[in-house]
Image (cartoon, rainbow, N blue to C red; front, side, top):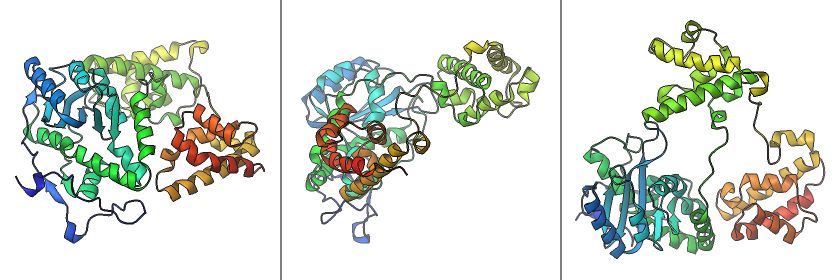
Length: 431
């Protein structure tokens, strides 16, 4: 076994003193070591029920946390399903599972019930894991841990290099993971993604404990694990890139019709919607409101590579939007359930704008002192809601209760409530 293949669990975290870690890179004496091969080599891909049953038994018998990762085919396929699942646990080694061949991994999820799952950027992988029956009851998110610990760069590669001293090869992160069979270099890359994840978790736990932030992190992890599945986004067509150019209701209807037509085609063909028709082309057609296929073909995004039949289906969508009665046209913007955009506060409520300015300054100063991003200390939306409609009186108890109602965790309330109470009191004069 080479030095690069040995565990990094005993390596010290590269930080000293009482300040957040500096991930500016290791010194020449501590040059990072390329990690080229998994410790036990690249395991075979599990693609049948018999091999899956053996893996479930092995991971159930393992010990300690389990490292979990998933690879999707974003930009290639429709949706965000998993096309490879990687796991590693002490006593079980590494497993690479094909969720296309083995679409139900609920048995594996049940075997790992109560075990802490270690993921990097957990909220990205949890939806696709949930779809195949894998839902953790406990987790440790190494990306979020890095943010709370104050690391400027929290990608997996940067964290492994600066915390453990190893370099991960990241060249296959954006490949089409729906490819079958998966090439050997891709499988090696996938196996290495979970190779040191538990080691990274252990080092970050020590660092968070050193900084007095471990309980903060555990509260955040519990919140992620217990969060319900997100509700489907309302009017997803409104997120079309370039929508800020579309202002008239008839044009909005064209965007909606083209987006929905594209989505149906993409789902049927199982390809990324962007490969069917680009957002820029949708916006171009909405602005031009073409009345014929010939006029549509002259627009950017509908050039000579678009066949006549395709042009006709896009023109049909435009025609449907053009034929809608005024009452059926979408309204500009979306219903606002919270406070208005901050840029409008000075006109609508100057006193609230003053409160928001004072609160933002207080949160920024506190986040800098604590060595973590402002959005992890408290979400900007929570600050806006509190400042738009502050409790009366705006004292410690009422502000703490309001923050809890907006979903803030106890550690966040403890840290920010006093600063926000002071900001709400100070920000009483119009800007």
